[in-house]
Length: 422
Image 1: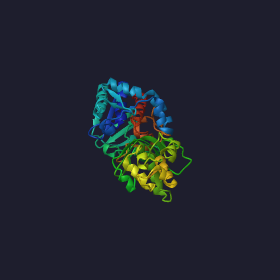
Image 2 (image 1 turned 60 degrees about the horizontal axis):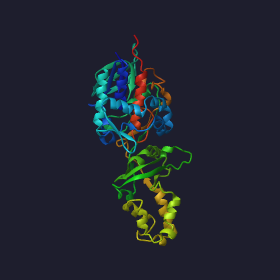
Image 3 (image 1 turned 30 degrees about the horizontal axis):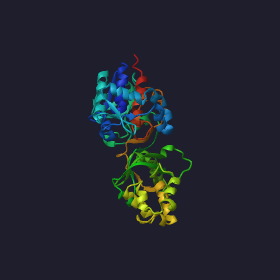
Image 4 (image 1 turned 180 degrees about the horizontal axis):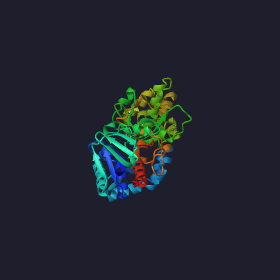
């Protein structure tokens, strides 16, 4: 009988198997895909952004209110330790300007293979192509039974690393939610997160392919009570044929998903928008000075705003302001000047939805963390049941934060799993 069966051979499951097996536990990992770590292989454009170059405090803060639950696990396994482990396993790493940590080879395969090799070196077993049908309490002497198509496997403990609903092509189809509900756990509503956004506006689609390296995006909910700082993100932005993508819009997509569901239930709610600050390093006072006829009156408007944004986007703003690009600043009507200033700092982009779970990098929502011990990742409702990774109600921004959370929660679980009794 196994001390621990881990369901899910992704980032969390593979990491946990190494730590638990190195403690001398008899560990089995079951993965329904024919190969393990499929999401690892796909992530970061097949480069795998394993963590973020920062301290544990910054990781915790990036998760907003969810960070409190992660604090103990992340401080026990900070980003520096994750990097050190991979370096020790033969995976050299590099830090990019954004703070993202990648394998120096730019190959996610090297990350996945290092985890599998360490799993094998530690003495754990990995079985791929095995779909788990049920996880249930046992009426016999052992605590749990893992049910597959052709076997019932008894074990003392089970660790669910089944992920959420994002990237369903990776096999993350929310299987674990039903199993935890069966033992009494609450699963908070789930939504696609870190997903591209869909806009109905034709002018948006005409900007396809244009990248803005530094934009501040704010999701507009209409609620003044919601002070969640994650509704604003400053990073790069990509206009696409369906709407927008890139770190800045994807980081606020969790709120778009939630609001989309709210509007489906209540059609009287206003339509969604995001606001773009196209010149986050330029204050409104500075903009007013640049548009001051006394200082730049002989400069053409198109040339002036072209100093900040690409010409195609500048054309959109000039159209909104009903101004020809050859118009001199001194000739600008007050209404047009105010419209240009407003669009540079608060360009409104209508949004219909996200591109859904198929394109979402993570799942917002999941097993309620109030029902999980943050020090051990053990269920507070069912002894011997542990949870780690995306199945939990924690989701962070782009930049390696979610892999860091997966490794940290898996590490905490594996260090606290108890061996078989008797």
